[in-house]
Length: 396
Figure 1 (cartoon, rainbow, N blue to C red):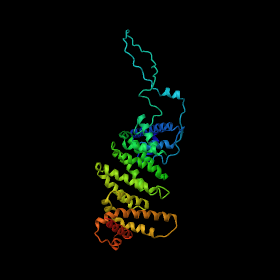
Figure 2 (tube, rainbow, N blue to C red):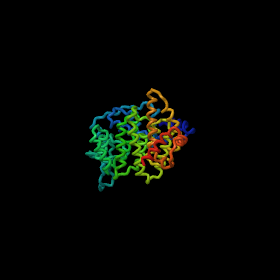
Figure 3 (cartoon, one colour):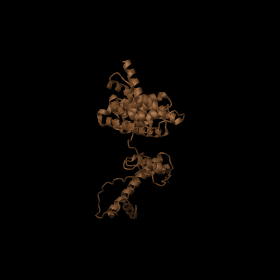
Figure 4 (cartoon, one colour):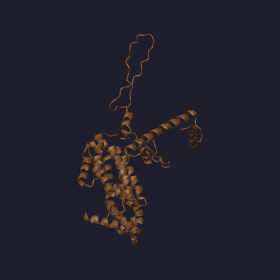
């Protein structure tokens, strides 16, 4: 970078000019970082068999570098440039580092100093440790060849159309303790796959990923505690996302399954981090206030699976508000497709609320159970809750 450019940047960002030594240091740091980013982008382009470095290659480097913002290329112009195409033999020859051969000390007979003639180092066969291979991948969690093969076999079989292969992969994840070696890679795979398929509304792949998470959490030989910051957001996204599928009949089992995974994870790792339970509860409470009805349904599922204490503390105080939200939708008579969709979601919400609140209300209230009291306390949902509590008392 030129001195003029550094002065312009400093005046624009800091409002003052830098000293000559500081400007020189900034220019050297920018040059070093840009050279490193371009080198990694070129390496990734070669690994993907691309003839030129594109913006996606630069974005790949930015995503894997903790010191760079993920949106650094948002306002950049086109960054494509063609890679050098050199013959393979010439690349191999240039990649070899020729080290100077240490010369032995010789006894000088004459008093006049004599310079030894330059000796060319002999060619080195094979690769050495100092070499920088052009196609060397940039990996945050480097794996050996066997571990990479194991990782690819597991991820490929989980999305296989054959149930036998999927079962074999899930059995490996749930029983094999050597999975802990590739656990960081699997966690990133879970997070990335979940994000992509939620956007694409691909429920079958999301189900496969959640089965993968369930197997990892249930494996007695490993601990996924250090990777929960990648796994739990993915599971919560499958539980609370507003749009998982264009069809109404496919995403309900996915939400139910994700709620079971959250509960199992909490029971297994809550003693290692006492803040986990409170953070999950706060996420569910915030989801109850959200506008999408599918998000409200996911929050009711999650709170119901955490036990009666969570239902009593979080759902019961919100019953009147939830009644006001779903009452006009259920009472409205319309043939519009969107209205029918909302009405079906409200029926699921009402059914789930009645199911999780009945044991709590049965323990809190003494008989006789009167419908007018329930309606006064809980609004539109009071009638269904009263009938469910009475039926439960009769069964007992």
